Image 1 (cartoon, helix red, strand yellow):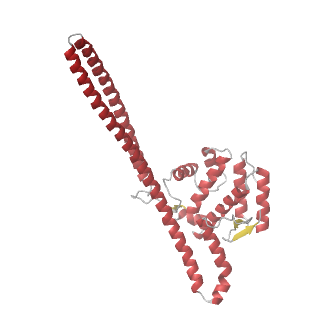
Image 2 (tube, rainbow, N blue to C red):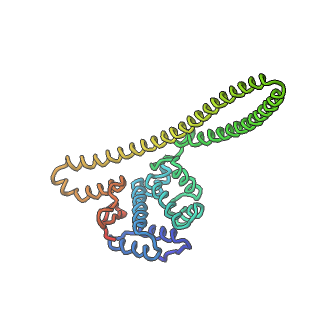
Image 3 (tube, helix red, strand yellow):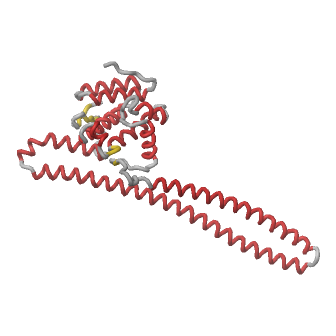
Length: 319
């Protein structure tokens, strides 16, 4: 089948990787094709490996859900591996000069069909991932009468608009107060000049009065600075709380993944010697896939690179 060529390097690379992930290839063929792409398009080998692996993992998850048709009819809108692939595809394309709109166009179901989604679905989801409005996990379809998990984002937008309106009101009020204060001070100065022309005693009294105003204004300015510092600290605290929530979610996800890994180990350990010998290759492959998903098996040991084939098997090749 003739390969369609595009004007953009990133899209050509994605198209080639997509064809490779759809065809069964041994490790030697796979390594040769990746090096060929690396040389032709001057793309980093590690980027190609990462994108290829993510495409294969997405395909594996689709097959676990009964295939693409069954997945599209299921209660799941986005698979975790699909979101991870989506984010990396956008990042990769942007590094090679493509903008968000063109990326959405080329990888949608109307072009490469890398994702069975529309341009607007892809673009909106990428922005939500980038802003941490949705997590990298399976996203279920919205049921009638129920809100999505990430709907509080809308509330945040409304609150932001309210805060902006309040800031405008405060700014207008501040300007009016400032104008009124200038008028008052100007009047005090005029009165000071008038009194100073009448008697020295009243001039001394006015000096004391002005000194009192200065002290009071200094105290007010100090309170204002403290209030400003308090608001700044509150903003930093809110940012830390949001970061803490994000880390908490990542920790919970990591704990779940480790529990799955532990179950694999327990099942293997309690099995008989014969079963252990018979299932050892499968067990090792499953462990490699789970460790790769956890980010603990990134193929940076020595010169070995990691590949995942369509059956979910992890292959090691030398770059």
